[in-house]
Length: 345
Length: 97
Image 1 (spheres, rainbow over the protein chains, first blue to last red):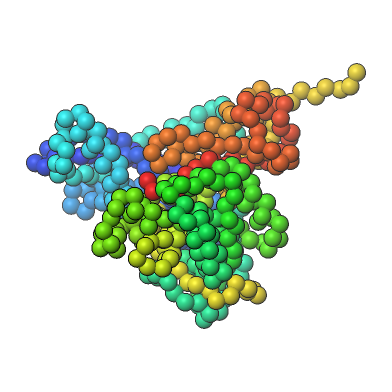
Image 2: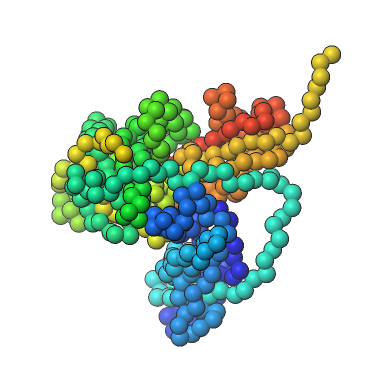
């Protein structure tokens, strides 16, 4: 996937009184937004399943009142051979973390007081297209297309129960009951130590509905990991073992993500949290840490990849949260629980 | 005395762990190390070099033909053959932070 940048983006920070504190190049991992855009239009049938999203451009969306160079967001536009380009727009909140990092730096430099209010704006300036550096490796993208086979979405919906908030912008995800039962068993067996597994399954395409959806058919317990009550390390041997297990099944399944447990009751014990505090704690449900996101980014970067967290708290029975790429950001999302995992396409 | 073929560049296929990001390399220099190849391919494949805290991530290259992880110091010309497929596998933490 190739992204081109006809504009150079920067984040400008302003102090409490509106004084500009300076501008820094806008650092952002553009891939999740690019992935989201590509997959969104593949779901709708406006991009082929084998589209690699090449010939994509990141352009600014000018702020309505202030105009250029101030941005109200950015757009990722993907060229469609013989057709109109497709595009998704993204807000300036995608640069909040970048702005926060700059603010921290300014605090260190005593240019901003700790806790002082600040605001930020995104600006963009045209840049000359640099010729790609010569030398180095010559590589071509040989990634497979979206491995979706035909199926009827309604058939799945009829035998599924929704869990969590279903957003119509999200790709529907169906999880076999067996997968959740096995994850629960594994979580309880590990007694307060983080554990997890690799989620595998199939992608289906309903041409009439203009939708692609996922079926999580199984989980492969993650082997060769090391876990504590606050961390689960996936090693190269973990991925090798999961790959071998996937091949052995011979079910034409693909990797769709990973799950892991959050032994919240252990975290609460360690901090001696009161029962009321535990119930209100943001770690108890729908919590996906920066480390958790990093695993997604490194191992399951496609927009159809998802993650499940088993929330093991002291005040309720085990619950599950699902996370996925929505509008270029990993967010909590709803899913469907399937009573049985078999399906004839 | 047998024929000795000197191959200066080796074509390879390199994948991420999901198998959903695959890149063909036309010219991996035989004299370079596997570590150098991995380092350059992380950029080409847009795979993260750092974890959430900014610490460098470690990736191992697994050679499918032999079913083993390559050492970063191994020379491409010694360890790899034309058309070999490598998988870049990170050592990475999920966790509270």
